[in-house]
Length: 575
Image (cartoon, rainbow, N blue to C red):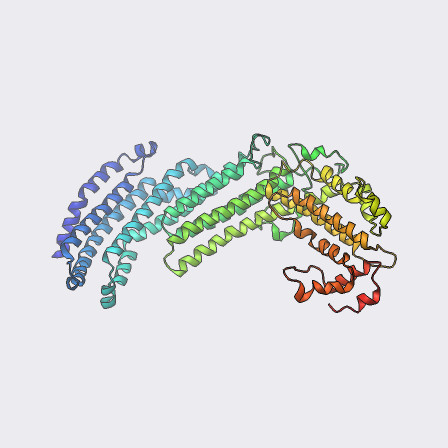
């Protein structure tokens, strides 16, 4: 009897809503053309609001104000709202089914999953449709949350498992199943929207307007692609479902792998002209300062498979997919770096918002696993950037003249007091000054304005590492006929290393370069000792905050360079 009365009551509450919906369904095409929200969304929201208002009235009337009557009142309220939910479920199901029919979602999903593009809906028409579906889910999730909050109470669950029954009531409802079906449509259509807009952004890729008047040093596709991905991720979050959010994150990762990474890799390879066989390495350094800077990208196509996406196609298959680049190598490398940064920012924003949707450990684990894929993609883009810079630096270093290399290989650190007093090693023709001029004019010249901070610092670091390894390979080997160092020579060597360290540190923007010269600085420190036994004052427990980069055998080799130290004194040391 009570059930029938409640059904009559709720039908009266929602009858005007359903009558209005019938009128709106007849004019749905006009609403769609005007870009208006579909009438079914409004109708479903109105039904939920009617149930919520009815529930509030019942709660005030049924639930008592004292502790003894609360439990009994909640039990009555539960039975009342259970009947109300059954009636609401029937009405909601009609609304959702009507929406699917009006929008013809089954055919739409079928056409968009087909390989034939002529039947697919345009992405600009998908956008408002996806917003509507997201609102359906959001409102339904809020409604189910309202029911759970109204009907849940610790005392009820401890007595008869009412809270568990509430969850089963919701999950077995027609509305729950209908929204779950909508979710599958949503994921499919959102993936289509995402892919088509990413492809469009790539096809419309353009260089920065002017490198001299703007801080932007990457092409338009990077911003446009991640704008689309951010839009899709925010809509997925508004869907209020952790499972759907995970599906969209997976779609984002797939889209990046299949389209963006392939594009970025292809551009890096395409914009290489400097390392072509017919290109002379003796060309003027002004080549690198030109806007269409290109260099040493041929090796990019043969990078280690660990740093290239398994979905990446070779350049011949990609050539037909992309238009000719209107910019050079530096922008292509900057693109890779910015993609790495944007992918990481996207992960951070999704983690901040997405984890709030997670109810249990399972949801949290699945979302975290999906987010980790974005971190892997960020690392992959950064690897592309690093590999390109590494190849570029190797090509640029071949431009250092044989004169500078010869001076470097003729290091002389056995210096008499007279020569040291004259300061003949401080002139502009010293090997360290010649090497710095060569690097400054033929390797790094003009590139600081072309590359963004991190790619530029990578380039500076690569050149610094080459310099440090070159010097170490010349100074460290010990032989009777090899290089030797005396006391004054050790002072000069320490000064030269400090000069190089200062030069590269002044060129770096963010990253520190000092660790590159750490071994050479320690070699200079050991060479400057007054006696081999002084090493004990800074070795082992006496090292303090100093971390030794040299092994005990290397320390002995360095000490052997000093002409004043005897082999016996070095051999007897215990390190």
